[in-house]
Image 1 (tube, rainbow, N blue to C red):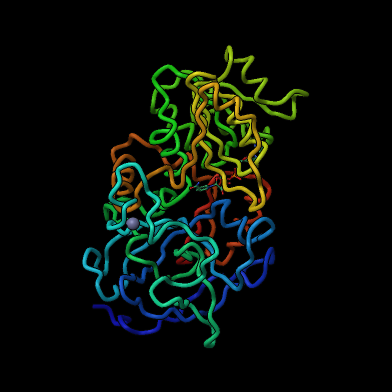
Image 2: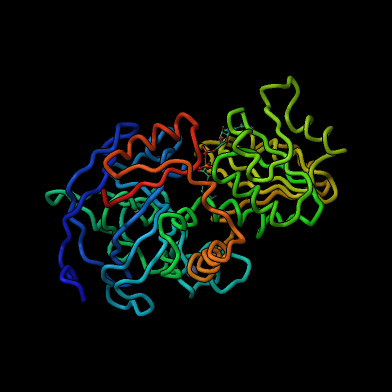
Length: 380
Ligand code: NAD
Ligand code: ZN
């Protein structure tokens, strides 16, 4: 037992007080973990576009003040009542969607949409007592997707923690806690391209490039990258993307451009932009008869997907996925092993590093579309 067990911990956290305003590093109180909860010390965290959407809160419900962050790696500090499979010192990756291991979804091989712990972006409190574990002078600060990793310590439900190999470097494998696993799983677990097939990837951020990495691992022969930002193309070459399409370079819809390039459409497409136009194009660019499109991007809350039903009658399939269909506790430890035995490269996704005190710079980089993942070191 550590000296902090059952005590409130005071530590630094980056608080989002208002939508779109720079985060402020504050001293916060972090309450001890309650039933089925674990308090973890975050060592590294990184920024994913989903954090930026909820910080901007333009197309999402505003929940403030809030501690954002969901891509991270840390070490267990203490555990609450009922937690038996984790103990202080274990290395963990927090995940925004959980696995209770008891509900119908957790028992189904096909789903990772746990009834108890599936992602809920509007909830700012813990499930157990509907309260926050964070406060400043007694005033509660809300959680974000059950993880809130922009804090030196955070409290997470045990079902949202993957226990990983303690030898895995947390400053690298932390990116598997969201974006990279999401993209990789979207291709390998959901789109499932056959060897030699063609795959279009919409959006060449970290998630899209991880989807491209999945296509490369699956043996796809053509990987077509689609992005509005031409700067992404150079970077994407390292990820096995073989051709590039910038929708801005064409007058006709990008789905028509891709259909012409591929004799009727790609075998698979994976959308990783969050923009509704790209989602529709990603669906309409797959080949009739067998094409499968997978949506990954998080849309504006009022977005509506519009397409002719004929596109479905013509035997195209549209799917969506959270977290690449991985079950966080059961599957993520083995994705970490893929990195450990060099099947999967993570270094190429990490383009920037910053100390925690400069976390706002990571937001600037993402807003400018520079780089892929910025690792934020919690210890200065
Ligand atoms: P990112 O901002 O780094 O990358 C998105 C890319 O899409 C950018 O390069 C941008 O230029 C490009 N883009 C935007 N609009 C486009 C359009 N209309 N056509 C083509 N390209 C376009 O973001 P990221 O961190 O890689 O995340 C990608 C998406 O995945 C986000 O929407 C994020 O919220 C979502 N996400 C979903 C899950 C999930 O489980 N479903 C998990 C993590 C992230
Ligand atoms: Zn469950």
